[in-house]
Length: 253
Image (tube, rainbow, N blue to C red; front, side, top):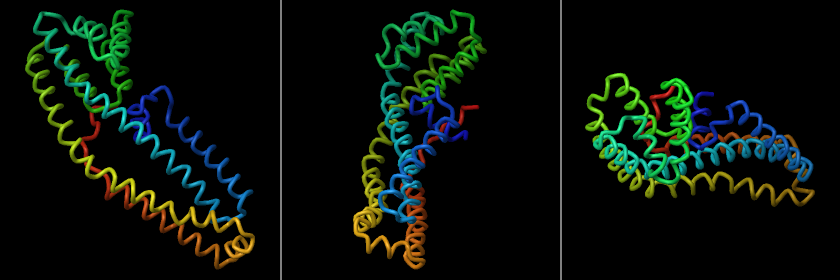
């Protein structure tokens, strides 16, 4: 559940819990599987359809989370530079955050504005930072939150140097991972599409009644179940071998 919660946060869906996600995916899988069973009357194809809905739903969520995280990461050097500039001018931490809410990258202004409003409304500093962290759900925001938390407790010691180092590190990571993902992404996507292809053929063949009768024999069912297991194993292998070991969020509860 913790992994699902982090993925929901990265996708900008922190208002939903993992339980909501599981319920929605399960309901969608049941609906699609029922329609496939009524349309084709092939048990193996029905089982694959249910699992495919689950897999595609999780893939879509991960894709959204990755796209949003990458887009926000490209804005983070500007955010760090703005905080550094404000701190160099003598602004305090809350005043620097308030400046970002006014002049920072447009996409992140509203979150910084809500953070400042929460602080002004009497919410606890640590509680507000945890809320802020969940709104972005990404590594760079986690680092900034913990930097601000530590700096707030230590009275600002090393704040400027830490902001500068974090901005340099973020720019370097964006350049490196952008190059790696551009070379790897299409290979993994093509492999996953290849897993679906045989089942598309099964669906096409199921239009004919004689093929449906063959699929529903004990031998036909065994072949489809074996194909389903192979598809599941292939999907897991593609997901495992095709994933890049990017730094993960560790500064979370």
